[in-house]
Length: 325
Image (cartoon, rainbow, N blue to C red; front, side):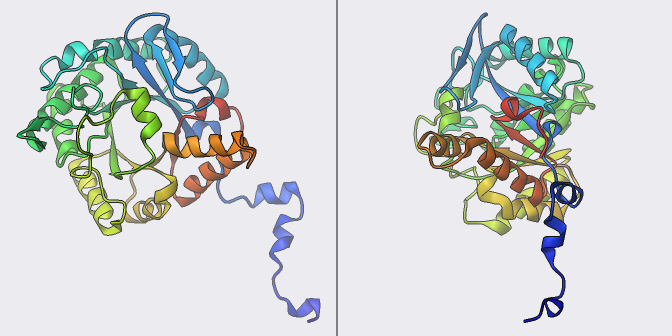
């Protein structure tokens, strides 16, 4: 076939780095990343749960060094998970359990007032059975759980959180949190809802860091079935109706189709969560000499941006901050 008969040649748009940069359709910048941390009680405590895997347990005072690092590297924000020093079965000591994380929130906002701060809102690390809601008669009690979650959200908001981030997957939680926040004159506190949170096999490293593994059964009665696409869309629609300010998809890599669905279904900001198991797979493969960790991580993060994510929660944010691709 003669060259003139080939028609358009896409390689013309790839011929050198300047052209490739000019025609790049989406980007991954430091500002697109949010770094999670696990807040524990005490002072001077700093531990990476497994070296190189990005899950950091820190006391409140140790967060200040991390804040400086994130600001230097231009990372977009941070997300805090509270890891109480003790648990209870019924949520009756919730405020006492929240106190160390509230101090961490206050410190963060004092030293980095413009750094967006997201705080996870869930009961799994607080309750002795490890489930995301209160248990009555051997079952998760949806509506009584909402009261505890609302109390938690108000506590985070009073401490200075910019966003409360309900990850519990109870029905009606976004509306319950919005009403509680507004009733406490915290109408400026936003809600980043875990709109799609699958019953996934990729959460195990997180559960070690958060001390949140369920003590019996699993979470299939409230987290979403991995096989159901239409059901995920219904969750998204309900969270929009209930007043969510932004939506989160978790895990990200195994739900890129749902991310695209969400992007096309609504105009709210959309967040991907590169969960602990996703990053652990890449790290383990790199340690086995099978791939380049940094290149593979950037590629997966870019795939999330390409699917429609405005930004990404990733345990690699603090490492990748400062670079654009």
